[in-house]
Length: 376
Image (tube, rainbow, N blue to C red; front, side, top):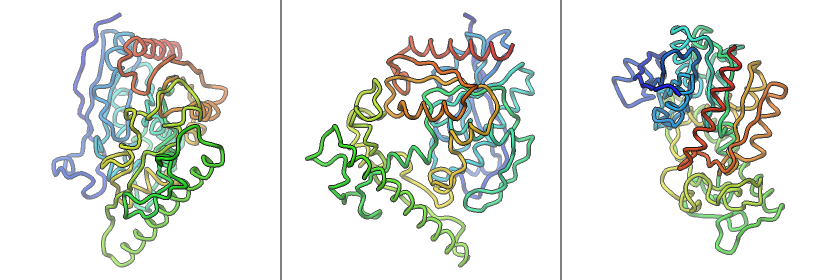
């Protein structure tokens, strides 16, 4: 294998909405930042990006570069703070990275959709192939030009979530009685109730799923009504709010549901209930506009729906001990790319491949081989 080096990358991006960041420097000089892992002679490149997570320390940076694929681990403008995140802006940030790699003359450029970055990559490529976005789900205009979104040559999905809205819907605590009361719970829908333990019966799971979808719809309706009132009265353009208890997917504690090799607890340790009632979790802090763009059913960033609109080849790597990507998830992605997807498994792989360096090497080798073969 080659010796890999790292280069710090800073890229300008189109400005976003007022106060999407508390940094005056970022608002006046909007940029995104990343790390390019590279090695001498590499002619193929890839980008790994997440809507909000910091991927500059991604486990694939050096292993991929050493195997012939330079990797740009790029952060969005919303890194480590998704409270104001607008997905229509994030694809512009990803586009800045693709443009950089194209301008450097790589023979082929790929996207790696890891975890929550998978739906982002599918959204990006769908718009790169057929640009339709002119505004956000809140109705705010977004100026995106084809040059902002150069298409890529393929997508590698790795421990891929379906998208922020679908992920949160499946994680919402169905037992919430009052959105303003973080503790009150309807026992009949509480997966963490002291007198309830897995395995759950089918009727209970269906009632939970229905209640989760209903809760999602109620929050979205309230958000739409509040946003409309604010703007009609010229009171404000947006507003913050909190969504309590967002870590209650029954699959986190019932390993018989959508069974794979996972341990109980999801991806946040073995005490899912504590995470659910904790002060910080998925979707906890929102604005009205960010809810509509990333978390609500109105989000345009549905992973499989967007992947189905693309034409590029797809590699999907399943981590068989993943606590939040399940066999049904893998099947959804596979159907969306039917006829052009190659599926591989990392046996025993957890979501982050924590403590599994041998599986990191396997993932890097599989991606490098696939990308190099596609680029020929």
